[in-house]
Image (cartoon, rainbow, N blue to C red; front, side, top):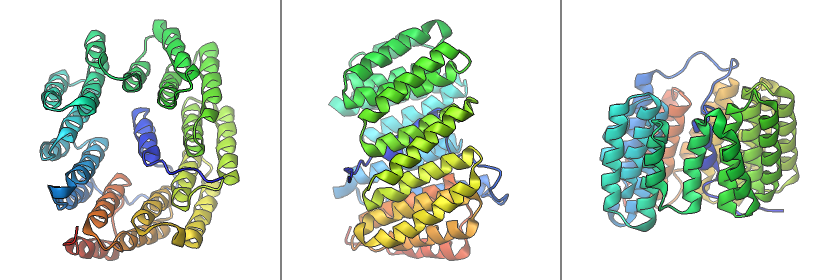
Length: 402
């Protein structure tokens, strides 16, 4: 069967992986030549510049969304000063959310003063926003309080949010949970799963994945978490079943539960193979499986899967609209880089720039080019002169019509 496209699936999964310490990890199969910090920041500066070329009228929402993605990449690479400079240049509610995300990283770094300062700045932005925008910022600010161990403040900030949004705070709580609160968190997650509400169930799975690391040495609680996750995942859309099963395997592997992790990887691969996904989703989903295999040491299987995915992309390319093709190629490029195949990675990046340059309107071209620069920076890949020339030419071509 064909699943409906879920625009947030990959992004949400990536953010969860970062929160659990499973972000852009690199394996022993990878080449030693990585981009320097300076080269990565240059790519992110370029990405922000590209995002900022999108005219705010009438594309303020798209401009701010891409600018915030650059800020998130700066945070992931530990470039908090650059993240702050970029966040301050964003207009609208996403500025507040970006500032709160930076504050969370300062809290994780135990820089209490800066964490508080960024929470206050974010809440000032929130005060001028309405409804769900204010809620989004406030929830991210409440996560700063969670990171700092300020439970009452976190609860106060999250109190007015929707149950689904409050669930995000529970995930943050679970990642820091004290042993005496494990069962209470698990009870809450089970109640959320029992509602069969999509957002609540998804939040509960996220919470259990965070909690699983905390209870890894407790056989009974670990078994409970695994049972609940395994029971909840089949209630999700098929694309999310694949990505969450992969995330589950990665957490299990990181916690030393290798046999169970291998079983989950087998389950995700079988589900992926048995389902006819939209052509635009095949490579991103398949690459998530391959990258998990790389982390778990199964490099050769991953390599074979990636080459098969590239062939599938070529075979089904015409089924994908031009403004979505580069996403598949970026996924392949990142995974090829992780498996140590620099030549294939560069070929995919070059193709991503070309495919992202085909739309007649400059806005989607700018979004794709920005995303490709972010991808290169996060993968710590030095673009070849040929790829960099393609990027520069694509940037110059960002002119009317937008």
